[in-house]
Amino acid sequence: MREDFRPSETQMHYFDQDLTTRMKELGMIQGDEDGMVNSIDWYNWDNKPRWFVHVLLFTERGDRRGYVELDVRAVDWNGPDHPMGIENVEVAGHGYPCNSTTVVQWDRSTEEWVIQP
Image (cartoon, rainbow, N blue to C red; front, side):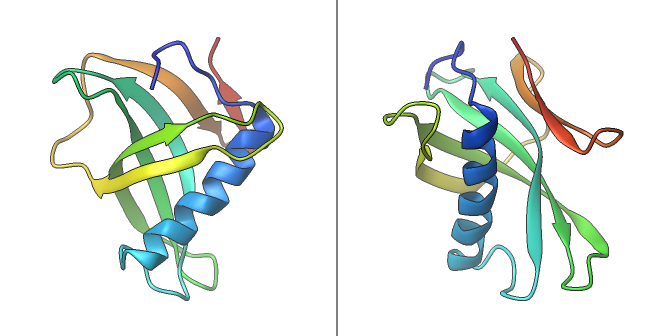
């Protein structure tokens, strides 16, 4: 993963859906729950570049039930109009990485992801 990579809006929609599916497969959330990417930060403090992804969790009724912080390795091989590949997802064993670069942030007022330049 490169620090300067920024997903397109289309890729973000795919990534959000694919990550939720992967989280269900891994048992991180139940089948009747849902998740949504709140923010993505790139970091590389241990020579293992990856995304720190903050995911909001919701019940089937849409009530917020908490969040989970993940380390995710994703790749972009098909261009901005196609999904990214998710290579690895694991619960982050740490808090917010101080030395990170913000990639994407959910804007509650517009209900859209803001992709940083």
